[in-house]
Image (cartoon, rainbow, N blue to C red; front, top):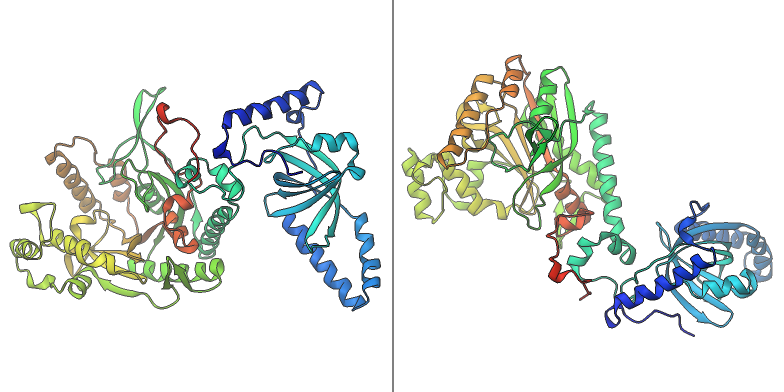
Length: 531
């Protein structure tokens, strides 16, 4: 007899199935067997470990007994006395009569379980047959290998630990609808267990970055998420309100300014794994809330940070992927080779055939942009720096597939970077790109408080000119610089994009457990079905 409730979810009314399961739950409660009252279950083994341990033991016994099958069976028989206790979710049931096989899934893997009426008793077996796919149960039994060669647990005791009131997606096709997978990540993890590997890897990446920086003498710190002012940066913040203080506050768009205050205060090397919030658009590489890792080191410059990030990526690739040439979306990315380093002007000349040095005036630059159909947002106010940036966006970024460092950015778009002493039109700033995607940003940090305040004021004035009255100068940060900040190199990287790269994930939503999603309207609030 096939196990009940195997009809595809999309072919039945999900509410009817829920009612059937509620009726079973009410019957359990009426018989004083409510599974929700259970507070603890002693788990002594996990599915993956059980399989590995049994295979190892088998191999050791086989090595001793050789081809003597009778001696092998005699040696393995005592293993039945070693009872394991496992717990997990029923993913399938099959069988008939007095014995049933099922697949149990725990946090590590699936394992087959053999349940027989002679071992657990008629009453318990009768109850067990009513349990549903998705129910969470506990099993005590011994490990053995079936005639079909599958390592399994022979159940001696079974216990229902939690009742699943909603059916899982149809078992042969899993959960395919991408939107549903993101909205209901818990369901995605249940029926697509490989998804969990991405998030385990994410955790390992963070751990290895921490280890790498800690070993270099960096100190991990935490800075505020709620800020009292909105700075005049390009990114738009989320606004909230503090009731007790009766003041608006802003979720941070970066961790930079507070981390640099710590450099002023005497920390030589600091970093933060920080959650960032930006009230902006969404696409495969942008989510309104995301994670950055920003690091600041006194007495170095942006070239010191170039060396650091190259070495960090090589180290991460080897530890996470086991090699420094990785495949991303079908392209081999050579992280282990020296990264190409180009100034922004060199990159534009290489890929667009246009030389910054040929522009004697801002007007020359604007005319060149017009000739090459390059749109410059600043229009007639565009400087040579603005035009260079526009050429880079139009001709260069999509060519940077292999790891590439682009450095020496125009001062126009680098308000926090130190000017180049030999050419004040440019700053000591770099960004690095992989697979035509900006992965991180770094500066020789601006530590001149007068210059910094002037740049902040220009940011505010630029907003006002566009009719945007938000944003103000961060006077406290300027004051911190007035006490003196040593020469400092700073770097920020997007953790989510790094995880995408090392897990070969196409979208940022694939590496966020709970990505931001537009709520389903009440008119469309019914359960989504799979594709």
